Amino acid sequence: MAGAIWAITESGDDGLKSISFEVIACGQALAEALGSSLEAVVMAADGSAAAEALGAKRVDAVRVIEDAALAPYTPDAYTAALAQAIEADSPSLVLFPHTYQARDWVPRLAAEVDAGFISDVIAHRVDGDETVFVRQPYQGKLNSDCVFAGDGPNIVSLQLGAYLADDAAAGDGSAEIVKQPVDLDGAASRTEVLETFQEVADRVDLSRADVIVAVGRGIGKQEQIPIVEELSEALGAQLAASRPVCDNEWLPMDRQIGSSGQTVTPKLYVAVGISGAIQHLVGMKNSGTIVAINKDPNAPVFSVSSYGIVGDLFEIVPELTNQIREAKGTG
Amino acid sequence: MKIAVCIKQVPEGDARLVIDADGISIADADLATEINESDQYALESGLRLAESQGGEVVVVCLGPDRAEEAIRRALAMGAGRAIHLNDPAFQGGDAAATARALAAAIERENVDLVLTGLQSDDAGWAQTGPILAARLGWPSATLIMEIEPEGDTIKVKRELEAGWFQWVRLPLPALLTIQSGISTVRYATLKGIMGAKKKEIAKVTPADIGLAPDEVGGAGRKTRTTRLYVPEKTTGAEIIEGDTATAVATLVEKLQKEAKVL
Picture 1 (cartoon, rainbow over the protein chains, first blue to last red):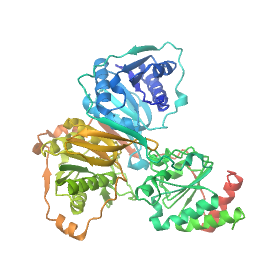
Picture 2: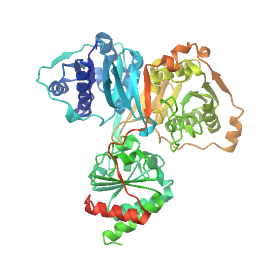
Picture 3: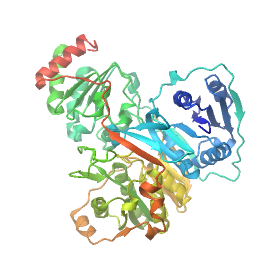
Picture 4: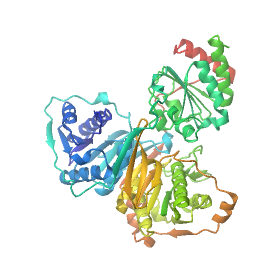
């Protein structure tokens, strides 16, 4: 394979985000299978701490793109900076985490450098000459195999949690740290960043709950929410929801679990009428015991659950509430 | 304010998905469809802006003949007219090919703002909007939850991860991808549905927008889907069978004795 594989990392206010090591783990596996070199890439106003952390991993080099224009993040500055680097050094494959930030600018980058872009990838395999990337279209109900139609540069973004940060192997410390010069003077950002904030300062902290009952679109309408409220009370649980329920204002936004809401790991998570779009699953799949109640036996939520009951939630949930009350002696 | 809203026709959320004989797409027969959810919110946002600022909403849709149903729905909700990129050459594209075609159609319209959903509920690339902005040479912002027009600029609230948000300002013309839940999507009224029948849908081919057939659709794509399939279940729930009372009793017992969480 011609060019190197680049693993693009993401930094926030607290430095390097842990998702970056998921990208390194995938990059290491691909570099080994394809006989390519692997470079970690830092983009920041000051990337020295991130470069040091990445240099401890098994990578051939750490490429540091530093410029004052890279903080705060804007799509124009990030696109211009990485497009210059790609055009200068022609990597064969550029890997990203499929974060909200990546979604904001990486498609623009793909257009800028005329790259193919396979987004939200959950796995890969090397079949002879071809590298196949697996995605989950149709909201996770199906899988698809995707390949690039051209030689590159090619871009892949990785679903959060698809690769494990802990799998990023440590190196022998020989990785060279290379500063990549970029010229962003002519690429003034058109985006003016005004204010970054948390919406609800005193929001419900669901991450501390031992038991969570979460309700999804299957509940049908707001008038039926009390059915799950009663189950939640019987279990001594916090009530939570998937995105559509909050979008419809059947429950407040701060009860939302998933990529745009909270990430939780309670001992017991009961998913009621939630089909399990990936955006929801990433927020709850590491819970201890997961129970799913859904009318669709093929709902993706069952794939992450410990126990499932397929059927009508309007029959099952009230029965479950009664039996829980009896079991707890509160019936 | 002239606003283009890009919509995609996708299978309904509850639709039964049958993989087509081609092995890479969903069979069309008896498929229930709808306007992609976040595109509905994009359309609602466009209509509200046109109502408060004055102006019109033009719906832009790339899809086969059946996509006309989605377009008529958008017109019934209040869009003024529509552009339907409908030609066999447009089919089978990835986000890059689709965005190129949409850009060529929108360039001719002299609009101030383009709105799209944040991603489609079928392919789910989450790419078409920002690529379209790059092709137009315009700034973009994604996952938008609030829009405040300010004349030549626009102030928008982006959703970040884990409950964080950010206000940014962009000069117009610009493109925004809209997050589901930004507002309440209106229903089409009977009057709207009747009126939509008379509204213009301009059918557009690649030649009409200055593109060669091999620049769009399957010929213009940079990625290729080789297989669509039902994922193998490697892990999964123990499905508890029986009538409701029995199944629930079994579940409660398992939660007490196996999982020890009650």
